[in-house]
Amino acid sequence: NSQLGNTQKPAVLLEQINRSLSGQLNNEFITAGYFGVDLKKNKLLYSSAGHPPLVLFRRNDNIITECKVAGVPIGIYCDSKYKETSLQLFPGDRVFLYTDGLIDVQNPDHELFGKTRLMELIKETRDLTSHKAVTFILRAIRKWSKRSDTETYSDDITLIIFDVKLNNTAN
Image 1 (cartoon, rainbow, N blue to C red):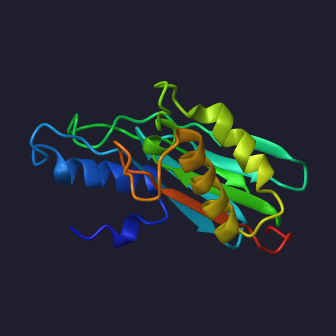
Image 2 (cartoon, rainbow, N blue to C red; image 1 turned 90 degrees about the horizontal axis):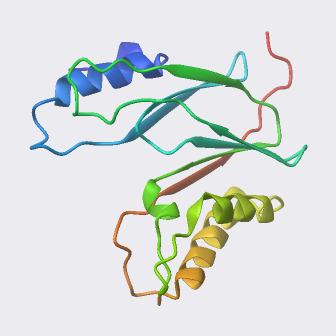
């Protein structure tokens, strides 16, 4: 099923994907977050299916906001409904998306890395490029967890960072 017509409607897209995959995941589920950017209005539209919150870092003001949107993971209920939210974007903003494996990393004392440490690292990367920020954060997590470069984690770790460079004149 092509969902091309729903790409500007994150909640509808997640509902369609959920309906398509329900009953086919062998009692498993999928968390997902989906966003789109309206370049004419400088707005980000976001919906979540049990995924960690999207993080907006307004670097010009040094303010971090978690974009929490409640949603059931894909594959649990066939008729799940999803909500979406929109955020106004400004030049200099930085958006972070990550999987829960990133904050669930444990050190040898079985302590979780957690959101607080992630938010501190986000602020530390303020003046780095998005590419260097990803590298900095992943290295900091590896060092904190005392893992060598060849050791793996118990869960997947994904981190996506992008910087906003839009016109400041929304219509």
